[in-house]
Image (cartoon, rainbow, N blue to C red; front, side, top):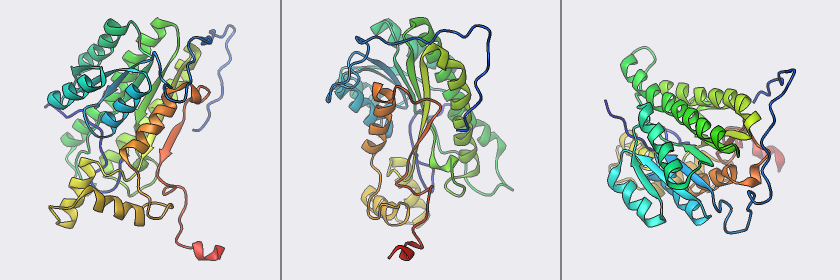
Length: 310
């Protein structure tokens, strides 16, 4: 069964460390140090000379990230199964497109190899592709549908980390791997059971791989958005509320009123893309094993009793 490589919000609600003790070795591997020529941090070109692969990059958060990466000087490979959208976007930003179903490890390896063939290196891997999966009660859940969800959301990201790490270790200049998680991994009740399972697993995988890859100068982090009015989330609201003509603006209004400490402020695709850009840039050079939550404070606190401050 083919599965779409795309970013998304969970069907009803959102889209979206414990520090391990350092193992002691007789001889610790040397961490790759970037020299001054590698660190290019101008106001408008924060990824100048960098090469990036984005899975699920043809639309939504992936497309917004591809655009902002290109604007900041990166060469971008878009990997997706939405061939027309992906090709058009890649052409518009001077990038490359490759058909990629992240369920198939060989497809992900081919996307990484395209970057190596095109530019001779890989600096940034954004594992963004995923699906929403089945809904409903835990008592009636279809396990075959769950397996399919995990093959995309978890195995797909595992494939991305594996092959990006191989390329980055071979390049001996470090790198940055970013994985798409969700606020549903942090707070219960924000997504279906299988979806929440998959997104929590991604955070665990991010932390463990950050432990291994740090000695090679490779940073591994997650982003966890909440309430982005993507095509997937808008479709879910239309289904649940019975409003077939519901607009992204209407969904954003609901999120801003009910799902954010910043009342009236809802997240945009660009908000998430800017967060990914930060993690991909040298501005976050000392950040790894971190889950950057983009939720307007929703999963951290409640404003229901804010009257006590007045």
